[in-house]
Image (cartoon, rainbow, N blue to C red; front, side):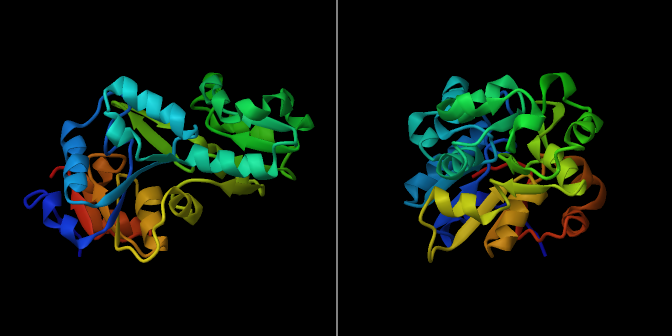
Length: 272
C-alpha cells in the first residue's frame, strides 16, 4: 500500500534513509522555475546530515546542467549535487567510442556532449559507425514516423541513448524525449545502449551507495520508480508530474501497476 505524505510531509520519513536520489525535472523544477518547497527539502536533508544526489536524465554533461540551474537561481551548494545521464554517457563514449564516426540525433543544444570528439560527427547516417541519440531534431519534434524512415537501413548499428525518458513536461507543454526515439529504433530490431534511470550504471557512478538505506524520489514511473524497484530502493512518486492525470483518474495503485512498478510513498509536490 502506497502511503500518502501530503499530511505528514517528507520530514516524517527522512530519518529512515541515509541517501536520497532525487529527480530534477518534475520534482525540483518544471523546466522554467524552481519549486521553492522542494529546494527547502534539500536544505533540510543537509541539516540532517544526510546525502542526496540530484539525478537527472538530462543528455548533457554535469557542468552544462549546473549552469542551467544557476540561471534559474539555484545555489551552488545544491547544484554541486547534480549528476546527469549525459555525464555517464560521456564517460562511456570517451572510453569506448571516441575514435569512431557517429550520427547525432538531437537538437544543436546537445552538441556540448561531444565537443571533445566533434570531428567524428557525420552528417550522413549511412557513414556513421554508431548513432548517438540525445533527443529529437527541432524540425521533427513530434513526428516519430520520420525516425522510423531514417533508421530503416541502419538497424545494424548500435544506438547510444543519453536520456531514457519518453516524455517531459516543460511548464504546461509536454515534449517527447530521446527515449521515445530509442524505442522506435528498438522496436524495429535495433540495439540500444541506455544511460540514465532506470539503468543501474547512472546510480552507481554518481556516488558511493554501498550499504546505504536509499530512497528514490521522482515523478516518472518508467524511470525514477522503476529504477528504484530494480535496485531494491524505496521510492516516492510526486503525483503532480508526468502521471498527474493518470493518478487523478485511476489512483496511484492502479497507475503504478499498469507500469509494473511499486511505490512506497506518494506526495503531490515535494514538501518538508
